[in-house]
Length: 300
Image 1 (cartoon, rainbow, N blue to C red):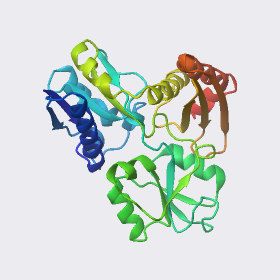
Image 2: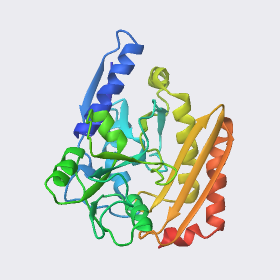
Image 3: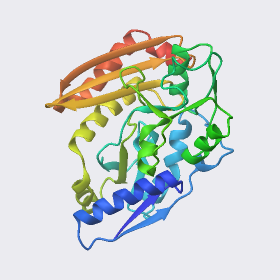
Image 4: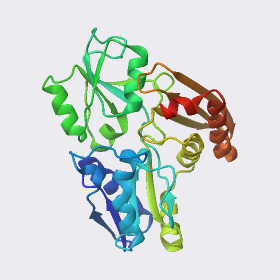
């Protein structure tokens, strides 16, 4: 038996159940128990504190449960995982990625088509910066909560549009007709967006061997490039940075972005390399951005 630890939100439970089914199908006779763990990030009154921000708040208690043996695997949204894992823990597998792009939910199909002064809801500093970089006149307002809550507030007319991750809608099976994809070459996703991280104890070889059955090599390479960039640039979820990698014919292509919270100062770099050099590519693009002044932007 394996014990999976997850947050209690509908999205977290849905994606954990999908992983459970996939793993049990690869290992006949294996039983996976799902353990719900309330994290600090699930407290609606809690705001990001310190440099770790919500990333640390969404994974801290799950990592503690891993470390003390209450669970065997922590199931996280990759974009919530801090650049540096807690000591003694490792990412045991990266399953196939869901759509990485964001969607604009509203009556129009693009940020450019929104009415002057339209109210746009998002809790992401990255999304806020990229929206304002295109439309300074828009009122971008904080919108937290689970996917259903955000959609309900939009339907109630509190916002003219909201921006969400397409992966959340897909994993919840929500077919929202008003959800319009934002192209990744124009609206760069967060590091790891759409991917999952299956975290385990670094020395637990039996669990790592089991998880290897649902590793997706293409997603793993793409995420490796993105996370290498995250580590090298020195950012976190409170800084508006973005990175998105794709893998084709044995090569990884990576696009990266660092911007200030209002989208006024913006630096971008892109490149490609053999898949075996994915992490080196992430570090290289981070070095280019730092040489161009990214550290000043990240410091605010």
